[in-house]
Image (cartoon, rainbow, N blue to C red; front, top):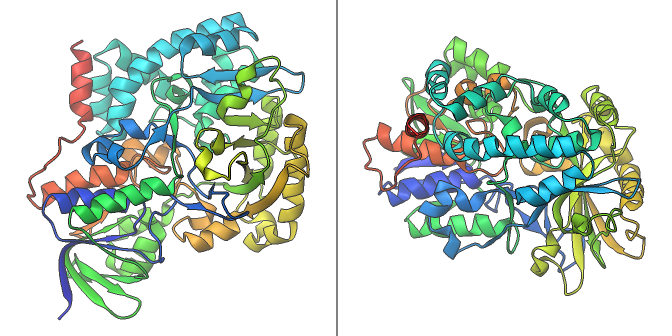
Amino acid sequence: MPEQYDGVIIGSGQHGLILGTYLAKAGLKILLLERRLIFGGGLSTTEVTKPGFYHQMHSVNHFNITQTPWYKDLELANRVRYVTPRYDFAQPHRDGTALVFSRYIDETCESIARFSKKDAQTYREWNAKADLISDHIFWPERYSEPLAEAERDELLSRSSAGRDFLEIINRQPLTAVNELFEEERVRLLLLFKMSLFGTVLYDQVTTRSPMGALVRGFDLVANYQVAQGGSVALARSLMERYVQAGGEFRSGAHVERIVVDQGRATGVQLADGTVINSRFVASTVDVPQTFLKMVGEDQLPAPYADKVRAFKQTAWTLFGLHLALEEAPRHIGTDFDPHVNEALKVNVGCESMEQLFDLHDEVAEGKIPSRISFGTGSVTQFDPSQAPDGKATAYAWHAMPYAPDGDPESIEAVKEEFADRMIETWREWAPNLTSDNILARHIYTANDYTKELVNMVEGDIFVGSFSGDQTMWNHFGYRTPIEGLYMAGSPTHPGGAISGGGGYIASRIIAEDYDVPLWWTPVDARASLEKLAGR
Protein backbone atom coordinates (compact mmCIF):
# COMPACT_ATOMS: atom_id res chain seq x y z
CA MET A 1 0.00 0.00 0.00
CA PRO A 2 1.29 3.50 -0.80
CA GLU A 3 2.30 5.68 2.14
CA GLN A 4 -0.30 8.23 3.26
CA TYR A 5 0.34 11.76 4.52
CA ASP A 6 -1.72 14.86 5.06
CA GLY A 7 0.74 16.84 2.99
CA VAL A 8 3.78 16.31 0.78
CA ILE A 9 6.14 19.25 0.29
CA ILE A 10 8.54 19.26 -2.66
CA GLY A 11 11.88 20.94 -1.92
CA SER A 12 13.71 21.40 1.39
CA GLY A 13 14.93 24.96 0.98
CA GLN A 14 13.85 27.80 3.27
CA HIS A 15 10.23 27.77 2.10
CA GLY A 16 9.71 24.03 2.36
CA LEU A 17 11.23 23.91 5.85
CA ILE A 18 9.16 26.85 7.10
CA LEU A 19 5.93 25.59 5.55
CA GLY A 20 6.51 22.08 6.84
CA THR A 21 7.24 23.23 10.38
CA TYR A 22 4.13 25.39 10.66
CA LEU A 23 1.87 22.62 9.36
CA ALA A 24 3.52 19.81 11.34
CA LYS A 25 3.28 21.89 14.49
CA ALA A 26 -0.43 22.34 13.68
CA GLY A 27 -0.82 18.57 13.92
CA LEU A 28 -0.60 17.50 10.26
CA LYS A 29 1.43 14.52 9.07
CA ILE A 30 3.94 16.12 6.70
CA LEU A 31 6.61 14.61 4.43
CA LEU A 32 9.34 16.87 3.03
CA LEU A 33 11.01 15.54 -0.13
CA GLU A 34 14.42 16.63 -1.44
CA ARG A 35 16.03 15.60 -4.74
CA ARG A 36 19.55 16.17 -3.39
CA LEU A 37 21.21 14.45 -0.44
CA ILE A 38 21.41 17.70 1.52
CA PHE A 39 18.75 20.16 2.61
CA GLY A 40 18.67 23.94 2.72
CA GLY A 41 18.64 24.96 -0.95
CA GLY A 42 20.49 28.28 -1.25
CA LEU A 43 21.37 28.21 2.46
CA SER A 44 24.73 26.53 1.89
CA THR A 45 28.12 26.98 3.53
CA THR A 46 30.99 24.96 2.09
CA GLU A 47 34.78 24.63 2.06
CA VAL A 48 35.44 25.16 -1.65
CA THR A 49 38.85 26.88 -1.50
CA LYS A 50 40.91 25.44 1.38
CA PRO A 51 40.07 23.45 4.51
CA GLY A 52 38.78 25.70 7.27
CA PHE A 53 37.67 28.49 4.92
CA TYR A 54 33.87 28.53 4.69
CA HIS A 55 32.06 30.21 1.81
CA GLN A 56 28.39 30.97 1.14
CA MET A 57 27.82 29.76 -2.40
CA HIS A 58 24.41 31.38 -2.68
CA SER A 59 22.81 33.52 0.00
CA VAL A 60 25.37 35.47 2.05
CA ASN A 61 23.47 38.29 3.74
CA HIS A 62 19.93 37.81 5.01
CA PHE A 63 17.49 40.72 5.04
CA ASN A 64 16.22 41.56 8.53
CA ILE A 65 15.73 37.87 9.36
CA THR A 66 15.49 38.32 13.12
CA GLN A 67 12.40 40.49 12.65
CA THR A 68 10.54 38.03 10.41
CA PRO A 69 7.40 36.47 11.86
CA TRP A 70 8.65 32.92 11.31
CA TYR A 71 11.97 33.55 13.08
CA LYS A 72 9.97 34.63 16.11
CA ASP A 73 7.17 32.04 15.87
CA LEU A 74 9.62 29.15 15.53
CA GLU A 75 11.87 30.53 18.28
CA LEU A 76 14.94 30.35 16.08
CA ALA A 77 16.94 32.76 18.23
CA ASN A 78 17.63 29.72 20.42
CA ARG A 79 19.15 27.93 17.42
CA VAL A 80 20.90 30.46 15.18
CA ARG A 81 22.41 33.83 16.05
CA TYR A 82 22.66 36.79 13.68
CA VAL A 83 25.08 39.70 13.52
CA THR A 84 23.75 43.05 12.31
CA PRO A 85 26.67 45.17 11.05
CA ARG A 86 26.68 48.87 11.92
CA TYR A 87 27.75 49.77 8.38
CA ASP A 88 25.68 48.25 5.58
CA PHE A 89 27.12 49.60 2.34
CA ALA A 90 30.32 51.28 1.20
CA GLN A 91 31.63 52.64 -2.07
CA PRO A 92 35.31 53.58 -2.41
CA HIS A 93 36.32 55.87 -5.28
CA ARG A 94 39.47 56.22 -7.35
CA ASP A 95 40.04 59.76 -6.05
CA GLY A 96 40.52 58.41 -2.52
CA THR A 97 37.09 59.31 -1.20
CA ALA A 98 34.46 56.86 0.00
CA LEU A 99 30.74 56.90 0.70
CA VAL A 100 29.43 54.77 3.58
CA PHE A 101 25.84 54.02 4.61
CA SER A 102 25.26 53.23 8.28
CA ARG A 103 22.28 51.81 10.18
CA TYR A 104 22.04 55.25 11.76
CA ILE A 105 20.65 58.25 9.92
CA ASP A 106 23.07 60.85 11.30
CA GLU A 107 26.15 58.85 10.27
CA THR A 108 24.71 58.17 6.83
CA CYS A 109 23.81 61.80 6.23
CA GLU A 110 27.22 62.97 7.43
CA SER A 111 28.84 60.71 4.83
CA ILE A 112 26.51 61.92 2.06
CA ALA A 113 27.04 65.58 3.06
CA ARG A 114 30.75 65.28 2.27
CA PHE A 115 29.63 64.92 -1.35
CA SER A 116 26.42 66.98 -1.36
CA LYS A 117 24.71 68.77 1.52
CA LYS A 118 21.54 68.96 -0.56
CA ASP A 119 21.55 65.20 -1.11
CA ALA A 120 22.11 64.61 2.61
CA GLN A 121 19.02 66.66 3.45
CA THR A 122 17.00 64.87 0.77
CA TYR A 123 18.07 61.51 2.14
CA ARG A 124 17.10 62.52 5.68
CA GLU A 125 13.63 63.59 4.53
CA TRP A 126 13.05 60.40 2.56
CA ASN A 127 14.41 58.24 5.39
CA ALA A 128 11.71 59.60 7.70
CA LYS A 129 9.10 58.52 5.16
CA ALA A 130 10.75 55.18 4.44
CA ASP A 131 11.11 54.06 8.05
CA LEU A 132 7.39 54.65 8.66
CA ILE A 133 6.47 52.94 5.38
CA SER A 134 8.74 49.99 6.15
CA ASP A 135 7.16 49.38 9.56
CA HIS A 136 3.51 49.77 8.57
CA ILE A 137 3.35 48.91 4.85
CA PHE A 138 6.42 47.27 3.31
CA TRP A 139 7.04 44.75 6.10
CA PRO A 140 3.41 43.65 6.72
CA GLU A 141 2.85 43.32 2.96
CA ARG A 142 5.99 41.21 2.65
CA TYR A 143 4.45 38.53 4.86
CA SER A 144 0.79 38.67 3.78
CA GLU A 145 -1.06 37.41 0.74
CA PRO A 146 -1.18 40.45 -1.60
CA LEU A 147 -4.38 42.45 -1.62
CA ALA A 148 -6.16 43.22 -4.87
CA GLU A 149 -4.74 46.36 -6.46
CA ALA A 150 -7.94 48.42 -6.08
CA GLU A 151 -8.40 47.52 -2.42
CA ARG A 152 -4.75 48.18 -1.65
CA ASP A 153 -4.80 51.58 -3.36
CA GLU A 154 -7.96 52.57 -1.49
CA LEU A 155 -6.49 51.60 1.88
CA LEU A 156 -3.20 53.35 1.14
CA SER A 157 -4.99 56.53 0.09
CA ARG A 158 -6.46 56.90 3.59
CA SER A 159 -3.14 57.80 5.28
CA SER A 160 -0.34 60.27 4.67
CA ALA A 161 2.27 57.50 4.69
CA GLY A 162 0.11 55.45 2.35
CA ARG A 163 -0.18 58.32 -0.09
CA ASP A 164 3.60 58.75 0.04
CA PHE A 165 3.94 55.05 -0.77
CA LEU A 166 1.52 55.32 -3.69
CA GLU A 167 3.71 58.09 -5.07
CA ILE A 168 6.77 55.87 -4.65
CA ILE A 169 5.34 52.79 -6.38
CA ASN A 170 4.13 54.81 -9.33
CA ARG A 171 7.67 55.99 -10.11
CA GLN A 172 10.50 54.04 -11.64
CA PRO A 173 13.20 53.77 -8.94
CA LEU A 174 15.92 54.82 -11.36
CA THR A 175 13.97 57.90 -12.48
CA ALA A 176 13.25 58.85 -8.87
CA VAL A 177 16.90 58.53 -7.83
CA ASN A 178 18.03 60.68 -10.75
CA GLU A 179 15.43 63.34 -9.96
CA LEU A 180 16.04 63.42 -6.21
CA PHE A 181 19.84 63.39 -6.07
CA GLU A 182 22.44 65.54 -7.78
CA GLU A 183 25.63 63.63 -6.90
CA GLU A 184 26.46 60.72 -9.20
CA ARG A 185 28.19 58.67 -6.53
CA VAL A 186 25.25 58.98 -4.16
CA ARG A 187 22.95 57.73 -6.92
CA LEU A 188 25.19 54.73 -7.54
CA LEU A 189 25.29 53.59 -3.93
CA LEU A 190 21.53 54.07 -3.56
CA LEU A 191 20.93 51.76 -6.53
CA PHE A 192 23.37 49.29 -5.01
CA LYS A 193 21.47 49.43 -1.71
CA MET A 194 18.19 48.68 -3.50
CA SER A 195 19.68 45.54 -5.02
CA LEU A 196 19.52 42.11 -3.41
CA PHE A 197 22.65 40.32 -4.52
CA GLY A 198 25.43 42.84 -4.81
CA THR A 199 24.61 43.96 -8.31
CA VAL A 200 22.02 46.47 -9.45
CA LEU A 201 18.70 44.87 -10.35
CA TYR A 202 18.54 46.38 -13.80
CA ASP A 203 15.10 44.97 -14.58
CA GLN A 204 13.70 46.20 -11.26
CA VAL A 205 15.03 49.76 -11.05
CA THR A 206 14.03 50.60 -14.63
CA THR A 207 10.38 49.59 -14.28
CA ARG A 208 7.55 50.49 -11.93
CA SER A 209 7.84 48.47 -8.72
CA PRO A 210 4.51 47.67 -6.99
CA MET A 211 6.50 46.29 -4.03
CA GLY A 212 8.17 49.65 -3.49
CA ALA A 213 11.81 48.88 -4.30
CA LEU A 214 12.64 52.56 -3.83
CA VAL A 215 11.87 52.26 -0.12
CA ARG A 216 14.83 49.90 0.28
CA GLY A 217 17.18 52.70 -0.64
CA PHE A 218 16.13 54.90 2.28
CA ASP A 219 14.99 52.45 4.95
CA LEU A 220 17.40 52.11 7.88
CA VAL A 221 15.00 50.10 10.08
CA ALA A 222 15.40 46.82 8.19
CA ASN A 223 19.00 45.73 7.69
CA TYR A 224 21.03 42.91 6.19
CA GLN A 225 22.41 40.39 8.68
CA VAL A 226 24.96 37.58 8.79
CA ALA A 227 24.25 34.16 10.32
CA GLN A 228 26.94 33.04 12.73
CA GLY A 229 28.31 29.74 11.48
CA GLY A 230 27.30 30.55 7.91
CA SER A 231 24.02 30.50 6.03
CA VAL A 232 23.79 26.76 6.62
CA ALA A 233 23.16 27.54 10.30
CA LEU A 234 19.73 28.88 9.37
CA ALA A 235 18.94 25.76 7.33
CA ARG A 236 20.06 23.53 10.18
CA SER A 237 17.97 25.40 12.75
CA LEU A 238 14.89 25.19 10.52
CA MET A 239 15.37 21.45 10.01
CA GLU A 240 15.75 20.94 13.77
CA ARG A 241 12.47 22.76 14.38
CA TYR A 242 10.77 20.79 11.60
CA VAL A 243 11.80 17.44 13.07
CA GLN A 244 10.86 18.58 16.58
CA ALA A 245 7.39 19.43 15.25
CA GLY A 246 7.00 15.86 14.02
CA GLY A 247 7.77 16.36 10.34
CA GLU A 248 9.42 13.64 8.25
CA PHE A 249 12.25 14.25 5.76
CA ARG A 250 13.46 12.16 2.86
CA SER A 251 16.56 13.05 0.81
CA GLY A 252 17.52 11.58 -2.55
CA ALA A 253 13.81 11.62 -3.37
CA HIS A 254 13.36 13.02 -6.85
CA VAL A 255 9.71 13.77 -7.60
CA GLU A 256 9.05 12.64 -11.15
CA ARG A 257 5.32 13.25 -11.18
CA ILE A 258 2.62 14.98 -9.18
CA VAL A 259 -0.28 12.53 -9.31
CA VAL A 260 -3.48 14.21 -10.51
CA ASP A 261 -6.78 12.33 -10.42
CA GLN A 262 -9.90 14.00 -11.81
CA GLY A 263 -8.44 17.46 -11.38
CA ARG A 264 -7.13 16.90 -7.88
CA ALA A 265 -3.55 16.35 -6.64
CA THR A 266 -3.52 13.08 -4.70
CA GLY A 267 0.21 12.64 -4.09
CA VAL A 268 3.51 12.19 -5.90
CA GLN A 269 5.46 9.51 -7.72
CA LEU A 270 9.23 9.39 -7.24
CA ALA A 271 11.77 8.55 -9.92
CA ASP A 272 12.20 5.08 -8.41
CA GLY A 273 8.48 4.39 -8.86
CA THR A 274 7.46 4.94 -5.23
CA VAL A 275 3.98 6.45 -4.93
CA ILE A 276 3.16 8.59 -1.89
CA ASN A 277 -0.45 9.61 -1.31
CA SER A 278 -1.47 12.84 0.38
CA ARG A 279 -4.40 15.17 0.90
CA PHE A 280 -2.39 18.00 -0.65
CA VAL A 281 0.92 18.66 -2.39
CA ALA A 282 2.91 21.89 -2.02
CA SER A 283 5.70 22.69 -4.46
CA THR A 284 8.47 25.06 -3.42
CA VAL A 285 10.45 24.60 -6.64
CA ASP A 286 10.28 26.52 -9.91
CA VAL A 287 7.27 27.04 -12.16
CA PRO A 288 8.43 25.12 -15.30
CA GLN A 289 9.56 22.08 -13.31
CA THR A 290 6.35 21.98 -11.27
CA PHE A 291 3.84 22.34 -14.07
CA LEU A 292 5.54 21.29 -17.31
CA LYS A 293 7.45 18.31 -15.89
CA MET A 294 5.77 17.12 -12.69
CA VAL A 295 2.13 17.93 -13.52
CA GLY A 296 2.13 17.95 -17.31
CA GLU A 297 0.67 20.66 -19.50
CA ASP A 298 -2.21 18.40 -20.52
CA GLN A 299 -3.52 18.55 -16.94
CA LEU A 300 -3.73 22.35 -16.95
CA PRO A 301 -6.58 24.60 -18.10
CA ALA A 302 -5.48 26.42 -21.26
CA PRO A 303 -5.32 29.91 -19.69
CA TYR A 304 -3.19 28.60 -16.82
CA ALA A 305 -0.90 26.75 -19.21
CA ASP A 306 -0.42 30.06 -21.03
CA LYS A 307 0.44 31.70 -17.69
CA VAL A 308 3.01 29.00 -16.95
CA ARG A 309 4.68 29.36 -20.36
CA ALA A 310 4.69 33.16 -20.01
CA PHE A 311 6.36 33.10 -16.59
CA LYS A 312 9.53 35.20 -16.78
CA GLN A 313 12.92 34.37 -15.34
CA THR A 314 15.45 37.01 -14.27
CA ALA A 315 17.33 38.21 -17.34
CA TRP A 316 20.84 37.90 -15.87
CA THR A 317 22.87 35.57 -13.66
CA LEU A 318 25.78 35.87 -11.26
CA PHE A 319 29.44 35.06 -11.79
CA GLY A 320 30.78 34.25 -8.32
CA LEU A 321 34.39 34.49 -7.18
CA HIS A 322 35.27 33.23 -3.68
CA LEU A 323 38.67 33.87 -2.09
CA ALA A 324 40.58 32.39 0.83
CA LEU A 325 42.81 35.17 2.17
CA GLU A 326 45.64 35.85 4.58
CA GLU A 327 43.83 39.07 5.49
CA ALA A 328 40.59 40.80 4.51
CA PRO A 329 40.57 43.35 1.66
CA ARG A 330 41.62 46.86 2.70
CA HIS A 331 39.97 49.32 0.35
CA ILE A 332 41.10 52.70 -0.84
CA GLY A 333 39.23 55.57 0.78
CA THR A 334 40.02 54.39 4.31
CA ASP A 335 41.87 57.63 5.06
CA PHE A 336 38.78 59.55 3.94
CA ASP A 337 36.35 57.34 5.89
CA PRO A 338 37.78 54.61 8.15
CA HIS A 339 34.47 52.73 8.12
CA VAL A 340 34.72 51.71 4.46
CA ASN A 341 36.33 48.40 5.45
CA GLU A 342 33.70 47.76 8.13
CA ALA A 343 30.79 47.61 5.66
CA LEU A 344 28.90 44.42 4.94
CA LYS A 345 28.73 45.10 1.19
CA VAL A 346 31.11 47.12 -0.96
CA ASN A 347 30.38 48.47 -4.44
CA VAL A 348 33.48 48.24 -6.64
CA GLY A 349 34.16 49.25 -10.24
CA CYS A 350 31.76 51.68 -11.90
CA GLU A 351 31.95 55.34 -10.96
CA SER A 352 29.16 56.67 -13.14
CA MET A 353 25.64 55.71 -14.09
CA GLU A 354 26.71 55.56 -17.73
CA GLN A 355 29.40 52.99 -16.96
CA LEU A 356 26.98 50.93 -14.89
CA PHE A 357 24.26 50.74 -17.50
CA ASP A 358 26.68 50.21 -20.37
CA LEU A 359 27.77 47.09 -18.48
CA HIS A 360 24.19 45.90 -18.03
CA ASP A 361 23.40 46.61 -21.68
CA GLU A 362 26.16 44.18 -22.62
CA VAL A 363 24.75 41.56 -20.25
CA ALA A 364 21.26 42.05 -21.69
CA GLU A 365 22.73 41.49 -25.16
CA GLY A 366 24.24 38.17 -24.05
CA LYS A 367 27.81 39.46 -24.03
CA ILE A 368 30.51 38.96 -21.43
CA PRO A 369 30.96 42.44 -19.89
CA SER A 370 33.91 44.47 -21.08
CA ARG A 371 33.88 46.53 -17.88
CA ILE A 372 34.40 44.97 -14.45
CA SER A 373 32.08 46.12 -11.64
CA PHE A 374 30.71 44.02 -8.80
CA GLY A 375 29.49 43.76 -5.24
CA THR A 376 31.81 42.27 -2.65
CA GLY A 377 32.15 41.62 1.05
CA SER A 378 34.14 39.79 3.70
CA VAL A 379 31.87 37.85 6.05
CA THR A 380 34.71 36.81 8.36
CA GLN A 381 35.04 40.28 9.84
CA PHE A 382 31.57 39.70 11.34
CA ASP A 383 31.97 35.96 11.98
CA PRO A 384 35.65 34.97 12.39
CA SER A 385 34.65 31.32 12.86
CA GLN A 386 34.31 30.97 9.08
CA ALA A 387 38.10 31.03 8.54
CA PRO A 388 41.19 29.82 10.41
CA ASP A 389 42.49 32.17 13.12
CA GLY A 390 43.70 35.44 11.64
CA LYS A 391 42.65 34.52 8.09
CA ALA A 392 39.68 35.77 6.05
CA THR A 393 37.33 35.04 3.18
CA ALA A 394 35.85 37.37 0.59
CA TYR A 395 33.38 37.04 -2.25
CA ALA A 396 32.60 39.00 -5.41
CA TRP A 397 29.47 38.70 -7.53
CA HIS A 398 29.42 40.02 -11.07
CA ALA A 399 26.43 40.29 -13.42
CA MET A 400 26.69 37.84 -16.32
CA PRO A 401 24.38 36.55 -19.07
CA TYR A 402 23.22 32.97 -18.65
CA ALA A 403 24.34 31.95 -22.13
CA PRO A 404 27.18 34.16 -23.42
CA ASP A 405 27.01 34.15 -27.21
CA GLY A 406 24.04 31.79 -26.97
CA ASP A 407 25.73 28.90 -25.14
CA PRO A 408 25.68 28.37 -21.32
CA GLU A 409 28.79 26.18 -21.60
CA SER A 410 30.79 28.95 -23.30
CA ILE A 411 31.59 30.51 -19.92
CA GLU A 412 33.87 27.55 -19.17
CA ALA A 413 36.44 28.66 -21.74
CA VAL A 414 36.72 32.19 -20.38
CA LYS A 415 35.89 31.98 -16.67
CA GLU A 416 39.51 31.85 -15.46
CA GLU A 417 40.42 34.88 -17.56
CA PHE A 418 37.34 36.76 -16.36
CA ALA A 419 38.19 35.94 -12.73
CA ASP A 420 41.71 37.28 -13.37
CA ARG A 421 40.18 40.52 -14.64
CA MET A 422 37.96 40.75 -11.56
CA ILE A 423 40.95 40.36 -9.23
CA GLU A 424 42.96 42.88 -11.24
CA THR A 425 40.16 45.44 -10.92
CA TRP A 426 39.50 44.53 -7.29
CA ARG A 427 43.18 45.14 -6.53
CA GLU A 428 42.82 48.72 -7.78
CA TRP A 429 40.20 49.27 -5.05
CA ALA A 430 41.87 46.99 -2.45
CA PRO A 431 45.65 47.10 -3.06
CA ASN A 432 46.41 44.44 -0.43
CA LEU A 433 44.82 41.75 -2.63
CA THR A 434 48.24 40.63 -3.80
CA SER A 435 49.10 37.15 -5.01
CA ASP A 436 50.63 36.43 -1.59
CA ASN A 437 47.38 37.40 0.14
CA ILE A 438 45.17 35.22 -2.07
CA LEU A 439 45.65 31.66 -0.82
CA ALA A 440 43.06 30.04 -3.09
CA ARG A 441 40.06 30.92 -5.22
CA HIS A 442 36.89 29.24 -6.44
CA ILE A 443 34.79 30.29 -9.42
CA TYR A 444 31.06 29.59 -9.35
CA THR A 445 28.99 30.36 -12.44
CA ALA A 446 25.40 29.86 -13.53
CA ASN A 447 26.62 26.86 -15.50
CA ASP A 448 27.60 25.36 -12.14
CA TYR A 449 24.72 26.32 -9.90
CA THR A 450 21.94 25.46 -12.35
CA LYS A 451 23.19 21.87 -12.25
CA GLU A 452 23.30 21.88 -8.46
CA LEU A 453 20.00 23.69 -7.88
CA VAL A 454 17.87 22.86 -10.91
CA ASN A 455 15.07 25.22 -9.88
CA MET A 456 17.34 28.18 -10.70
CA VAL A 457 16.15 27.99 -14.31
CA GLU A 458 18.46 29.72 -16.79
CA GLY A 459 20.66 30.81 -13.89
CA ASP A 460 17.84 32.74 -12.22
CA ILE A 461 18.93 33.10 -8.59
CA PHE A 462 15.49 34.47 -7.67
CA VAL A 463 13.49 31.63 -9.35
CA GLY A 464 11.39 34.26 -11.10
CA SER A 465 11.74 37.84 -12.30
CA PHE A 466 10.90 40.75 -9.98
CA SER A 467 9.29 42.63 -12.87
CA GLY A 468 6.12 44.53 -11.97
CA ASP A 469 3.85 42.15 -13.87
CA GLN A 470 4.99 39.26 -11.62
CA THR A 471 4.88 40.93 -8.19
CA MET A 472 2.24 41.80 -5.58
CA TRP A 473 -1.28 41.18 -6.98
CA ASN A 474 0.35 39.91 -10.19
CA HIS A 475 2.49 37.27 -8.44
CA PHE A 476 2.20 33.66 -9.57
CA GLY A 477 -0.15 32.65 -6.76
CA TYR A 478 -0.28 30.07 -3.96
CA ARG A 479 -3.40 28.18 -5.02
CA THR A 480 -3.52 26.52 -8.45
CA PRO A 481 -6.37 25.30 -10.71
CA ILE A 482 -5.57 21.77 -9.56
CA GLU A 483 -7.34 21.21 -6.26
CA GLY A 484 -4.92 20.24 -3.52
CA LEU A 485 -1.84 21.57 -5.34
CA TYR A 486 -0.16 24.68 -3.97
CA MET A 487 2.85 26.81 -4.83
CA ALA A 488 4.84 27.95 -1.80
CA GLY A 489 8.30 28.95 -3.01
CA SER A 490 10.14 31.88 -4.55
CA PRO A 491 7.85 32.22 -7.62
CA THR A 492 5.16 33.38 -5.19
CA HIS A 493 5.02 36.64 -3.26
CA PRO A 494 7.32 38.11 -1.94
CA GLY A 495 9.70 36.53 -4.46
CA GLY A 496 13.27 35.27 -4.36
CA ALA A 497 16.13 35.71 -1.87
CA ILE A 498 16.00 34.58 1.76
CA SER A 499 12.69 35.87 3.06
CA GLY A 500 10.80 32.70 3.96
CA GLY A 501 7.71 34.60 2.86
CA GLY A 502 6.33 32.09 0.38
CA GLY A 503 6.39 29.21 2.85
CA TYR A 504 5.10 31.38 5.70
CA ILE A 505 2.12 32.79 3.79
CA ALA A 506 1.23 29.44 2.21
CA SER A 507 1.10 27.79 5.64
CA ARG A 508 -1.90 29.94 6.59
CA ILE A 509 -3.62 29.41 3.24
CA ILE A 510 -3.27 25.62 3.37
CA ALA A 511 -4.26 25.42 7.03
CA GLU A 512 -7.41 27.44 6.41
CA ASP A 513 -8.31 25.42 3.30
CA TYR A 514 -8.17 22.21 5.38
CA ASP A 515 -9.84 23.67 8.50
CA VAL A 516 -6.69 23.30 10.57
CA PRO A 517 -6.64 25.61 13.64
CA LEU A 518 -3.80 28.14 13.52
CA TRP A 519 -1.40 28.02 16.46
CA TRP A 520 0.18 31.30 15.32
CA THR A 521 -1.13 34.79 14.58
CA PRO A 522 -0.52 35.50 10.88
CA VAL A 523 0.69 38.89 9.69
CA ASP A 524 -2.27 40.86 8.33
CA ALA A 525 -1.41 43.61 5.84
CA ARG A 526 -5.03 44.71 5.56
CA ALA A 527 -5.25 45.28 9.33
CA SER A 528 -1.93 47.12 9.29
CA LEU A 529 -3.07 49.49 6.53
CA GLU A 530 -6.37 50.11 8.33
CA LYS A 531 -4.51 50.84 11.56
CA LEU A 532 -2.19 53.23 9.72
CA ALA A 533 -5.21 55.10 8.36
CA GLY A 534 -6.48 55.58 11.91
CA ARG A 535 -3.24 57.03 13.30
